[in-house]
Image 1 (cartoon, helix red, strand yellow):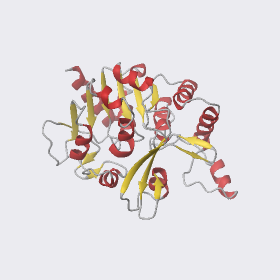
Image 2 (cartoon, one colour):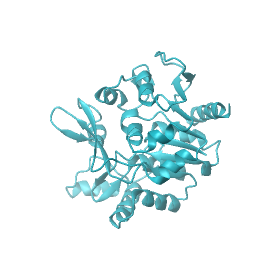
Image 3 (cartoon, one colour):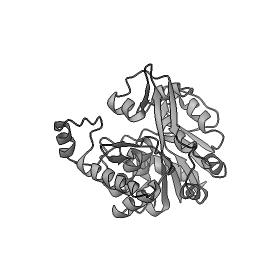
Image 4 (tube, one colour):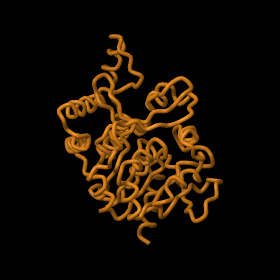
Amino acid sequence: MITFLSGGTGTPKLLRGFQEILDEREISVIVNTAEDMWLTGNHLSPDVDTVIYLFAGLLDTAKWWGIRDDTYITHDFLQKLGIEEFIAVGDRDRAVHAARGEMLRSGMTLTASTRVLCRRLGLRATVLPMTDAEVTTYVRTADAQMHFQEYWVKHRGSVEISGVERVCRDAPEATPEVLSAIEESDAVIIGPSNPVTSVSPILECAGVREALKKQRVIAISPFIGDTPVSGPAAALMRAFGLEPTSAGTFRLYEDFLDIFVQDVRDPVEIDGTLRLDTLMINRGKSLHLAKNLMALLAR
């Protein structure tokens, strides 16, 4: 079994390749939940849902979020009724959020509700929220603290930020399911997800770093030079106190890392790293990278 640490875009692109070379029952994905939020009475878990939709064959891979060919009747009618949602949620996507919200309100954990959704959507892979505790990523602006979703979706990352904060009632703990997935894996792969908002929240869950130190871990940089392959990673890395490059990413992971992969075009030099083509612009590129990583693991 291979376990992946995932956010909502970079790692799912890699998972698309691994789907073609592994039995999905041999794949476990530990997913960031620090971008979760309640919206109009429903519970969004955007990174979890992206991974679920990928394995269910529903994901809109043009956007890498939401359900392919979804409609927006409810969203549009809510606006007519004066309910402004800064995230445009599709109707079938909203049904998943509503189902999860009902399960959470009934007392189910996020792990249990995710398991139910996966079963009902026919998944064979295992999808695990990083924790059952409520953890939220906020960014600091000149005026206030802002939820990451508001920063990235509503403002398109255009707001100047000075810090990144994780807010939670108690220190988050990894679930037993998460720790078992790491411990029982043949290897752990950290895909090219955002190091600050996608991967770090997982690493901050009690027990995760310790478990990773006992495993074989491969991580893929999301940077080429000082430019992230996608998303607001550069601004977030600076606000987090890290250099917005592969070198900064490497420093974040180096205490448990066995192999660090940089893109062949990355001008940043780090001793002992491996160079591969990591730009997964289509399914073929995702498959090629997955095959190269499997060859590494077979050595």
